[in-house]
Length: 163
Image 1 (cartoon, rainbow, N blue to C red):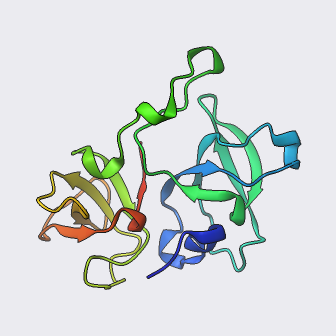
Image 2 (spheres, one colour):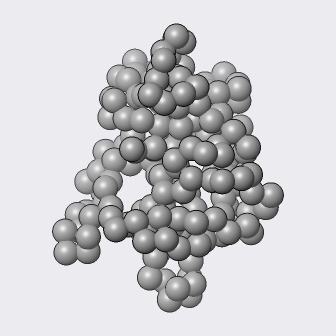
């Protein structure tokens, strides 16, 4: 299974051109910590080669453009929305993606059987009969043309991809 540890999850060529919602972390003094915990999204233009590579991240509700190294980016797995500072809500109040049917996701890791063939596929979350797995209706394109049966994925294998 691919891991989201230190940005290595973004090194897969099948994620190029896909919108991936991310959270910025482990920035320390970088930008004076201004972006720590902020949300944004990336659309990779090419496959990064190392976790030290820098990519453009559209940060916050205003989608300002900043560059961050991959090891500062983790996949977003909640339904939190990046509000302006004056409208900030408690991030603990946002439900996880896997328990929110109808959410668009991108597969970034192995399914429940360890199969990594679906990495890079779009999906829509469905109600899952298994609490430890997300049920995802997969499609290779967006908008979806569903011809596959749903797959089951651990939460770490999905990244939110809001439009």
